[in-house]
Image (cartoon, rainbow, N blue to C red):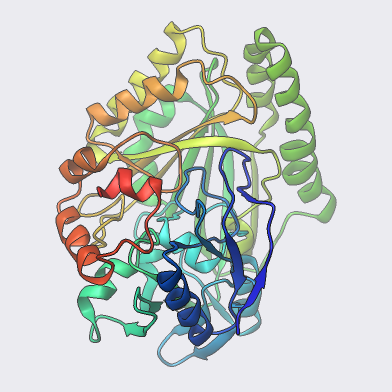
Length: 438
């Protein structure tokens, strides 16, 4: 039988979402997970699976239902070098997957900027990095094993249960509980990172070129300044030239986490200091170049806790949206300590992908934990919605099913599939009722 434990409650990484489930279980196989689902249905309880808690929305909140923890589903089921795939269980953290793949001489094609999420948590919420040609983690899925509301374990792929596969690759946890995923992988490769300060206007004037000539381009704009930090990551034939140990610790841990935490605390206590802090922070990011294993370039430690909103806008609207956002900040009384992060993605065909059917630019805004909202997220969301923006499913937003149906051409296909596989809403919660409808 699956391991069951008492609980005082669940809370996400940012501390802004919580739940008090009636039961917490950690099944060790898909079959045990099926038993959990069947028992919950018999008891009239809902079922929600959690990953590492890195979503800022309540997408994983179990309410008073059954909470499925990922601890027992972390096996690597198989690596197929010839097919270029790896099959792993849903609870495997990305940082473990990265190291296992490296040992096997393999790599994911693209990643987000952290690696603490579980495989299913990252793919089910649309976690993405930045890429000219390569999309989100969900876009790299080749097959899915999922437990449905009747407790059955279903395999799906482009040739088996194809409709379920279309929805389950990025399913928000609304169709069932994923127990395993097969991801496309490729031979391990090196990335050369070139990080460079640049003025806001220069970045936007050169944006088309920077995103066209670089495999992975992103930038951070520091509110209350005209300064940005740009990042260009491109494949390299080597040799590897990673940052020296002390330099990596100084830049990516001590300055980016320890010192930044202190600066954010000062800004939260004394908001009037934030513009000065922003000026200093924007100048602390100096130019540097290094070459390392792909996942070490894609990801970095993020220890300073915050809340975040992120929208994907059509590629052609990005310049307008970013300039309007800058004007919003300049005309307001807001004090924004965190930089705005801007990334790109090519169009894909996943029904609920924020990049579905259109080349997209992601614009993310953040607030340090405990900081007053000040209307920042509210006004940014209005701006994004005015340009047909699609909110990241795991990041704060207030959009509902009516709005989302207007910006996702296949939204109705997804909700129809949900009606088919979970008519009793065993996997529903308040968040899913808002974004998908009752």
